[in-house]
Image (cartoon, rainbow, N blue to C red):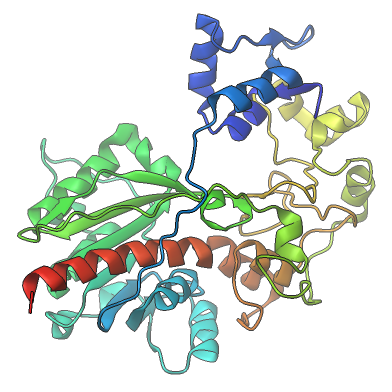
Length: 411
């Protein structure tokens, strides 16, 4: 246990926003102390441990989300990337009928690993999906977060033209699935003051879908050894009276050792593979960082040199000069493990995580191969939905679809 935690670290450990912790500090619920030089909030290690113990949420240790599909279910996946979401849904019993992706190397990855998948390579704007109407149960898509131009109080489909969410909604309208699933970064909740998300909800309502209350799913609660959070946006076709329920979280949290070594998650140690390297000046700095540490664990003069102007700004910046420990989940993977603000250093060796280590953290199977340059492979993996999280979402969709078809065909 560390002696002190920054506001950012406490936020990460407790799963609460920084603003919530600031409010708790003001009200005395979880009081912070101030660093003498910077006046930043810090928390004593024993405070955090006690708070975790007495305020933890009880989760049923015997739960399962597994649900066997009663029939063949089919999906269309948009913005498919390297296939993390599709892998998980297929494990759960939802067959990918067609996938669309614009990045040529991600398409090459999909085609290499699943030659039977129909992959539409190119911009989504070039494809019409009307022929799939009545044949698809689920449309999914991890569309980018883009602001809309607001013409009035209620946003309509045409108002979103030019954005990729418009294309997602267009395909949903063309296909008319029973349920649609959008996934995005947690920041979508507050993007453009919340207007972007409310606009999306308004558009899906206009095209005939009721919105399930939006949730942020934490990957660590779904057999993923990574502190990754994804916003899930679910639309159920109007007239369908089956309630969709999000997958239940598990109590066990996996760490980096579970990802890279033989155990419950994988039946062998991580395979050897290529990866990026740090330049020599960065390697000398990271050599001084202990497992689980980051820039604040460096000598003060090195902190100032390495951080530059950022040293004098607020915030914990816990991803900078960060070495992951074996006994903790990995920080959220980004498109590059070696950039200054997103270091993901190996626990024992002073190097970034390799391609296969990156893939393990995202729970890709070892046999899933990635095409393109090393940097392109990192990008594909970093942008993916973790396969195990996708599988649990898949079971929740199967449960919904089973209930729908059972009600529709009671015999």
